[in-house]
Amino acid sequence: YETVIFCWVMHEQRIIQQILSSLDLTDCDVQIISLVCSEAALTERLQRDIQAGIRQEDVLERSIRRIRLYDKLATVKIDVSEISAESAAQQIMAMGMP
Image (cartoon, helix red, strand yellow):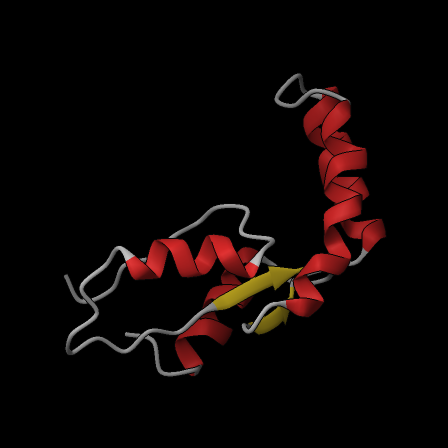
């Protein structure tokens, strides 16, 4: 594989380290990127999911509490509060991702 993307809530460095420690990273270029957003953007997005029945209401408080944890991560942060998924992908590709 040329590119592997882990897409999950990784709000603690230990989660990232646990995943990386179980992989053979020989001859790999590992780039760790966190997509972050403002509390307002997160609330808006989660409220849409709650209204659509995709998520339960308890996700909102839990997710808002996690926002500040991302500041502590040893990752490149991309603020996606006001950009599209396509724009975020373009920013990632501009960082040298294949």
